[in-house]
Image (tube, rainbow, N blue to C red; front, side, top):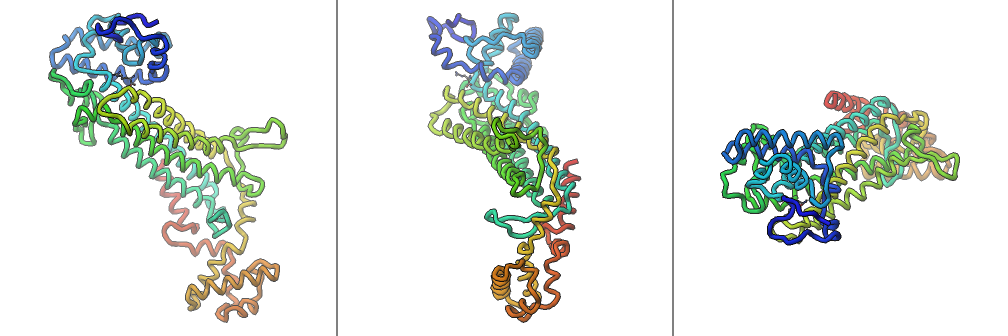
Length: 466
Ligand code: ARG
């Protein structure tokens, strides 16, 4: 196969690669999606080449117009991608040059090595901005579901055993905090993605007086003060992909958080918990059992974390043995990065939509939260207030629990006399400990699940996420 093209194979080669080799080495089947950023990079490069006198003004204009036209054709689905031209960069350049003679000057001082690093950074920058927006939407969905159920208490669990009372809102806000740190990690990552590698050419820059700062400015590679951000070593600039690894690492943590949230929802929607109801649209049935309603969206959220982790490890492995500088291995970075972005973005979006279509079964939550054993620690605190050392109090309440268990009674049904048989400091007011509302309102410290604190946190988030 492989017709000789003016771009893909230089005068060095007598013939094209074999069909098998072409198929093995092509990347157009997946890197075509970088087209928009490839065009932007080429336009900025052409503008710079004109400024330094390599292109005339009319050549620059012809190139930019030609690139714009190609962009419109791609959008309309009319552009024909040719596998024999290997990748997105050569497809676009070859077609431009076929139409616009000055296209043959576009690659002056540039290599696909700095071009692909540029395209990936430009592409990832946009994806990070959009992902961050979607995470905000998910945080809002969590806060809204919490706000709709601000007063609904549920048991908090450790070891998946009932521990102490919390509230639905408090539980959901825990995920809002995790997602906030995820957003911070992506913002940090963005700073290091936002550095321009163009001008590094193949690995050693160029003898031509390229104006790298101009290109960086044109493409928005600037810091908060507007100062252009450039890679400072040409070999590093073409060959490292740590910015992609960093993104995948932040995405892996995000996926882990989403997976935990999914696991909670999966538990809560079981008949055993029955704390929530997920709208039918976010569940599926069984092909055999007519009664089934399965939380597949949540389960796939949990499952997809595995592939996001896998992508991170694949990228790290890809990089670890590479000698300087560019090696074709690096072409393998794209599918892992694309898959990571696509997977986490879809998961975040679906999770938000599902939460917006989830209701809390307040009665079932109330029944579970009314378990007086959840307040055993409060009973120990009661004894501490009466002067007991905490270790004594812990021991005494342990004995109360054992006594109740022996009597086949919940711990709030023991008489004052029975309590006093364990510790004289128990008074008739001990029973008040088991008033759940009162118990919750005594949780006033920062970060605790008391009603006032949770309301304060909900209000803080609602304001931030507006
Ligand atoms: N498709 C290639 C990649 O994704 C572009 C860079 C090719 N450079 C080269 N020297 N063969 O990495």
